[in-house]
Image 1 (cartoon, rainbow, N blue to C red):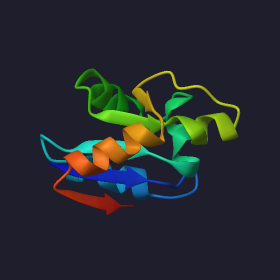
Image 2 (image 1 turned 90 degrees about the vertical axis):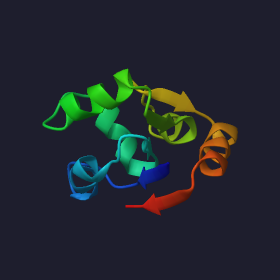
Image 3 (image 1 turned 120 degrees about the vertical axis):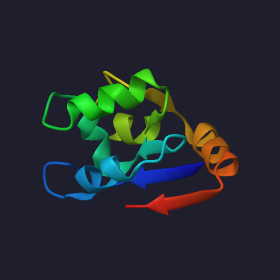
Length: 96
């Protein structure tokens, strides 16, 4: 399993758009930093994110949501301990 972390907002960077078609069947996606805005509103990538959430493969870092005064409408919100658990579980981590 690969853990893909995305840190850029989908509204000013293509990293989230680029990672979605590259996710393997067992891979996880963790949104950190400015990318957390992707789960707070509807946009062109929402359908793909919803599908990942239904498969329980979408995670969002709680501290970054809180720092921006946001809350997640989809995905599993994780704290730093959860982030570390995902990294330990993964064979590889790729940052986008």
